[in-house]
Every structure is written in structure tokens, then in C-alpha cells.
Image (cartoon, rainbow, N blue to C red; front, side, top):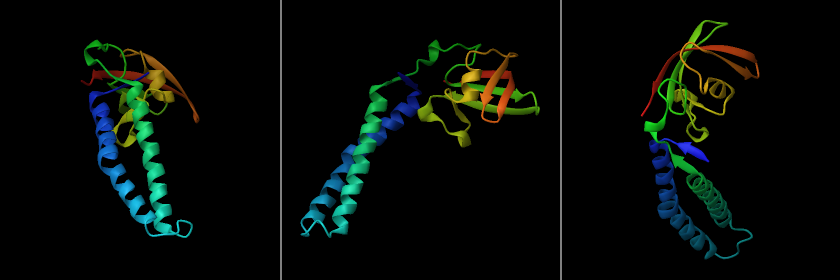
Length: 156
């Protein structure tokens, strides 16, 4: 079971609706047009349309599985004093005295450039459940990071 923010759940549902209602029907039309041009064995347009069809069907199935196995997070039930899903966490790397801020999100929402860190990542997993002032130890490929929790904000 995956938990998603309302925003991300709606984005996935919107993309799925667009793919099934707009993109896939156009691909079917392109495929029919390319098929009508004759010999399929030497028809680049037909092969391209089939590749687009397969890619789109794959994406549709992937999004359907995400929505079938996901639930929207009840932000009211999230703890306010501990790091949890949708928490914005400010922490300091003790070794380098570098301060960072990330929001902890599900893997389907991860976007490091936007400051969204997956709860399944080594750092995200180490931070989960910690309180302000506690030290989290994250096992990363470059070694163990010791991170002190400075501030926790619940994003609703």
C-alpha cells in the first residue's frame, strides 16, 4: 500500500484520464491510418504507431496500478512532533555542519530538485519517526551520515 498526497493522487488520475481519453484514441487512429497504407512489414509509420501504442498502454497500466494500490494521506492523522510522511524536515549533517531541508514523500512523489525526498531512501528512512533534537544515522553508499533534526513542519 502506497500513500500519496491529495495533489499527487490527482496528478496521476489526471494523467491517466488524458492518456485514456486523448492520447490512446489518437494512437489508435494513427495505427489504423498507417495500417491502411498497405504492407506492414516495410511500413515505418505502422511500426512507430505500434511502438507508441505499446508505450502508452504500459504507462496506462502503471498508473492504474499506482491508483489501485494507493490511498490519499489523512493529514489530520499525521503526528506533529515526529518526522512522518509529508513532514518538512530541517536537519544538519553533523560531520560537515551542512543544514538541509526536505519534505518526506512517497516514492512516486520524489523530486530532489523540488526538495522532496522519498521515505524509502536511506536518509528518508533514517529520519522517519525522529523528533527535534534527535540524531538519525543514515547508511548511504558513501558511508554513515549522522543527521541532527533541527525542525519539523507538517505540510497539509
